[in-house]
Amino acid sequence: MAKAAGEQMGVVTALVRSTFLVNAVYADTAREYGLTQQQGQLLCVLMAQPYGMGELGEVLGLAKSSLSGLVDRTARRGLVRRESDPSDNRAVRVELTAEGSRLADGFYAETCRRIEQLPSGLDDTERGTLADLLARVVRDNEVPPVFMVLNEQG
Image 1 (cartoon, rainbow, N blue to C red):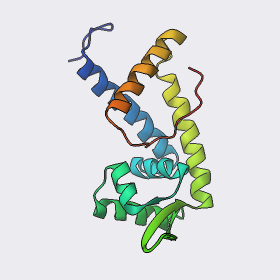
Image 2: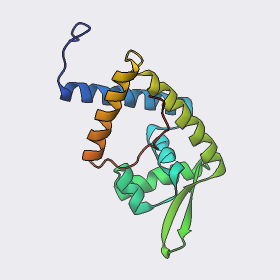
Image 3: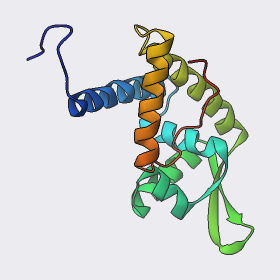
């Protein structure tokens, strides 16, 4: 049962619940853009640069077979393509198509806008503290760059 507003939470509860909150925003936005949550993640990762399949699997935390299926489905939609790796003809890199880039830009901007609203009840100092603490947790746990770094205002 849910407790009353203002309940005290430990770090585990707060982190787990915030993960559900962010995942819900991500999934809702993906659905509105005609994507699965995993396709949205793939597009956001590829915004920064093309990746080899091995690297992409590590960044997304997917097994080879799951990643191949995800890339296949996304490629059939014309959002990504496989290209030969110029440094190794046996290897393949995955990159966004022009349509994939356009969709990724819109999806990314809308997801950021919605997530930015989540801590709307915090003042600028509290938002800065939250960002600093979460950034430390991310760095300390060597989280891969699954979402580009924004030039955020606070």
